[in-house]
Length: 204
Image (tube, rainbow, N blue to C red; front, top):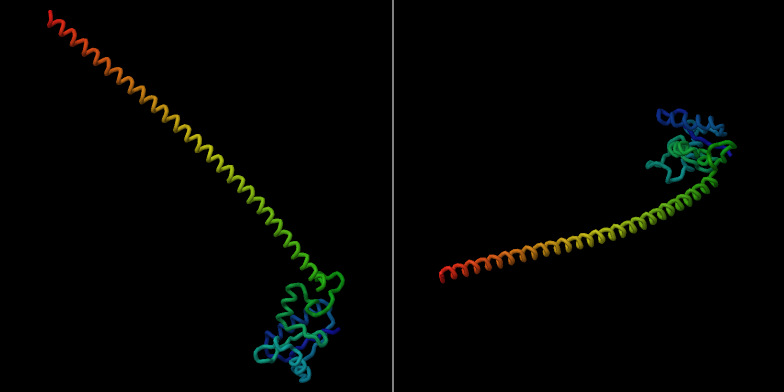
């Protein structure tokens, strides 16, 4: 399989030239076999590129700009998708090539398997977090019940103290009333004694 890179050797756009150099330079660094196809000097290359770029990948005017990358007849992408693949360390998958031995890139099949495993691991972690959350809720409910019980006991103690204080006040009031009655009775008795003495003196 040969990677085909469609370029415009005489492009007047500095941006296009830079993008073409980035793609070619990166493929050379990876030692990937590729072929440069010039669309500026070869009408056949230009027509083939335009016909084989998928319609949804073409710009609004319908004319795709270089660089465009193919794996034999299969379309790989333009510079933007190539750049994204480079950033994600998935250039071999982008080119449709198996990564060489010792490469950091994970094959597509294994990448999907790892993604599935990561999803399962994430689901397990979520379940564990939910379980921990449930235990925390149970503990919180238990603490709330204990708090309610303590509040009830406190309220009961306060009520008992209030009753005791009321009893004490009642006893004090009763004792005070008894003392006043006793004092009044003593005063009445003294008055009676004084009247009797006075009457006795008058009789004499």
